[in-house]
Length: 158
Image (cartoon, rainbow, N blue to C red; front, side, top):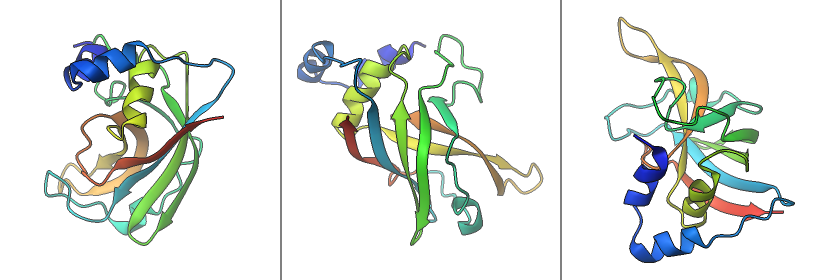
């Protein structure tokens, strides 16, 4: 399914109008700051161990909705963003990303960021035998993070 259609389905008609009229200044860089993850239970009743969350993700490039990891057909699998800063504090992994304005879904993704309706989720490798998380392997942008505390804190263009 096309991600643009999925994103539009979550918007009211007013939000669809606002998004369609959103102007992107190609001379600016677009950033957002997030809580990527924490050590509390997510919607699948799973938790990420602190030692894995303490991994810096600086320089990782992310896609949309795990499109590369799951080889999703019809999705733009190019880099949507790059993590330019990350740090672990308390029980949370925070990060800042710079968006790729050339990505096919940049405009709706940016709009959702400005409305607080977008998150960045870490992607983890699990042990087949125990299903425990063992390593952070990537990051992805999503409108439905499994961790409801994974959310955008601030979105800005400079």
